[in-house]
Length: 211
Image 1 (cartoon, helix red, strand yellow):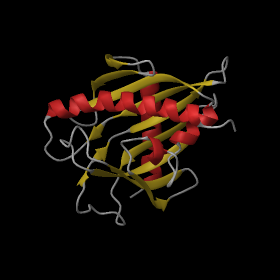
Image 2 (cartoon, rainbow, N blue to C red):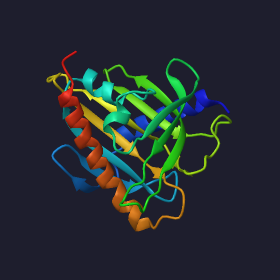
Image 3 (tube, rainbow, N blue to C red):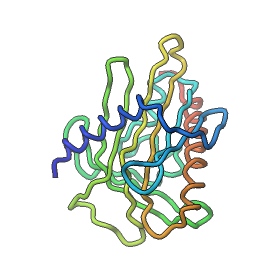
């Protein structure tokens, strides 16, 4: 499988999401984030977008979001129990396995996801991590986990030129959780999960010492 090509394609797809304002409907709002949704064109589910501004420099925010094994993410993101490197494809592309705990009061059992992940830096200073599900011979489905599938998803850390002490974070999720979950469970889980993601990210960034 051409993992580099898949990575480049998902990066283009996510960049397109950031520029397309059509069809979004707000479904949850907190002090940290507004969550929107629209029907996914990738699978029979929804694409969710989070827009929020985090009080912290881009460097601090990215330190929390950077998709590296044994990074900060597993410490603060309640939906990431493990994040493992399966294979490094290039300096900015890797195959990773993410393990998530049970959720929604046990209605959603533990999942795992295998994705190609690409880190991109853009001319305006934005740093992005984008991912999409792939198969990999080194990581077949494992007992005890339902294999889920991430359709194009990712996070963008966008610098705010007039206030470097703050960072805009755009996130996109469209995940097929696999298994046989009622649609109502899935539809209620993601907006709440994304709000928690931003809340925990904001708290973690606040706790970091200045670099």
